[in-house]
Amino acid sequence: MIRAVSMTAVLLGATSAFAEEGQEEQLDPRTEEQKVHDALQEAWDNAALEALGTRTASDALAEEASEPTTSEAGPVNEYTEAQAVELLRTSEPEVFGWLAGPPVRLRGCWYFISTPPSGGPWGPPRYYLTVQRMASQHCEAQSVVLDSSYLGGATVAQKESHGLALAFPSKQSPSGSALVHVRLFALEPKTLTVSRTGFLGTYRGSTAVRAMHFEGNRLLVDTYRYTATYARFLTSEENPTGVIFP
Image (cartoon, rainbow, N blue to C red; front, side, top):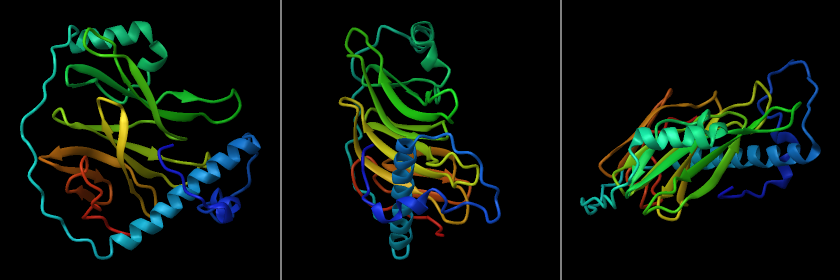
């Protein structure tokens, strides 16, 4: 995980915080270690919800600062998009089936975003948000796991050659009544490091991303409840505007 939240006091209650009243208890196949991990992740989301509610009360739209408009195209990759996809399909079929979308070309390199599952034969699988850069003449192969959740899928937005924004559904309990939130990541393509994270959610139901794209320096995240706008998502820590909370 990119960030951690110390929430020891709420670990025992985090897993059942959103359970429906009167719901029949079901056998939980998770190990004690898995339960602790999931409770920590739920606690992180709950703390992020509180922070989101606090800061959206008085946020105003920040004016967009000017940035260089030149694009670093990078060297030409010897693989076309179709060739890159076919190479991944034949070399890593277990990844190919969990791609979040078509590959992204940044600075002459191809990047694949996927959410492959991992888990035992009896317990529910966790899905791992993974970014990998394909090896080529000018590009070194590299892969990084950014997050995990009991719900897969991801949304990707590219800002020219400057970087990527990733939205990942955060469901940190296998319970059917557990809420789903959204975790955001700004990714620097050269090092595959996360320059900032974001969070969208509410106490009144699950939050899902319908679409996400850049308009200039602004990142617009369209959820099924509102559209959150980050003035400079890749280069600042400014809070989003347009968030309806709770």
